[in-house]
Length: 68
Image (cartoon, rainbow, N blue to C red):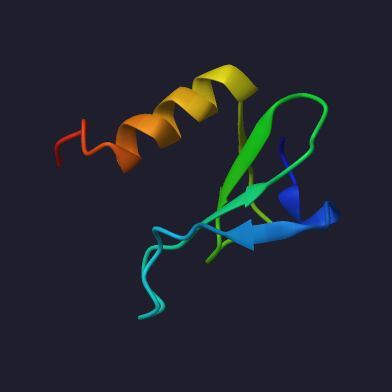
C-alpha cells in the first residue's frame, strides 16, 4: 500500500511505547490482510501481511518466543 494515509481506522499497537519513539500502527478489517505502518510517517507506505501470518506473529510476540 503506497499511501496509507487515505485509509481511516488506524490504531497504535499496544506494544508501542508512550515516549513518542518507535510506534507501529495497524488497520483492522482490511480485505487484503493486515496493513502495518510507521506512525511517524502516516503518508508513507504500509506493509500488508496475510491475516494468518500476522496472527501467528502476534501470538509469538505475546508468548515471548521472539528474541531481540
